[in-house]
Image 1: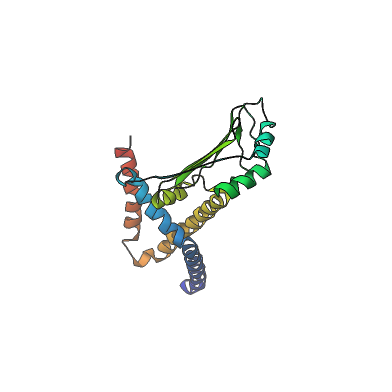
Image 2 (image 1 turned 90 degrees about the vertical axis):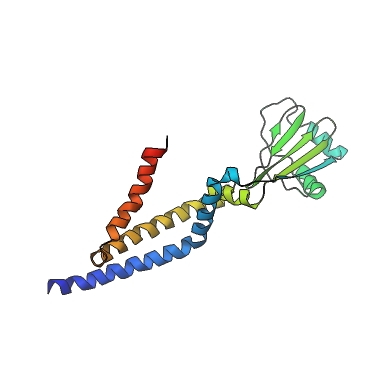
Length: 211
């Protein structure tokens, strides 16, 4: 009688756990493939040859924009205001570069805008004396791009939120999987030895081989 009373409860929790398990696994699928693959490429980064491609562009500001730029923060070394909208618009049209409203480093001699990105780097410099504009883009390839996605390097707020949500979904996937193992463990005697081995191996490696 007691075993029968517990069966509906067990069936309910097993069904609920399976539901949360498959939903979280579906949400994690692409992320887990990405993070597993980039875990391998990051671990062997020194053995994977990268061939950066550098793109450089140069132009000169029109006189009107150069004069406008000369009036801004002329005597300041620590200003961080973005470039004026009309200067940004000219750069977008002339160089096909969108600097947006990123903070710029102003000095009496030049204005420098750092444009970091996943898988590479970029910067833009404006000489305040002659109006010369220099832009350089370094692209380290798609493996470096995916590695930076793994690390959340220069990926912006949206990707940072994705990593947080992905981590939460992975926790749900792992915890529900553990409870499902517990509910089936009585009929599978190797369950807990295998789980214990999965915990013990990384623990021993960390204690014995990581200095």
